[in-house]
Length: 152
Image (cartoon, rainbow, N blue to C red):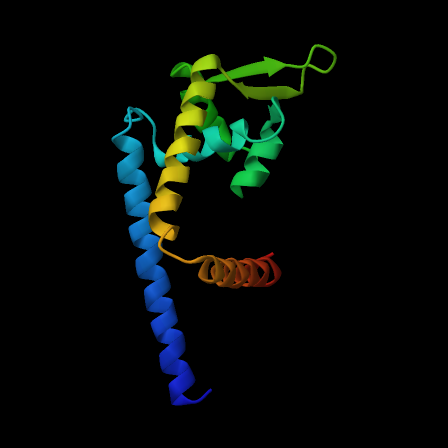
């Protein structure tokens, strides 16, 4: 690798890290100012996982989606149950099977989080014209695929 490529890669790395850090801080700040002060970022991400797709989620599905071990979300789920956002139910036919779903309050919070994320995305990426957004989508998709191949 020549010096020019090395410098460009370092610049890309620096810009990516700065952008990621700013995005994370902005998202956290917005979440905590929108009547979600009692939720941690991990709890918010868990609510998002539970809220997407099927109504009832198995603990293993939640763990896989979050990219953590099976036992990791248990503590978070317990806290969300105590706060009234999540419901835990056992399968009547197989008592070992546990299903997690959002309570009515949890669904409301989920919808607020999704709405807020959409507003943040509009503010950040709305400055890009359609061709720039398409290029960014292609680049990010390529990087995601690369991460999946290298780190899985």
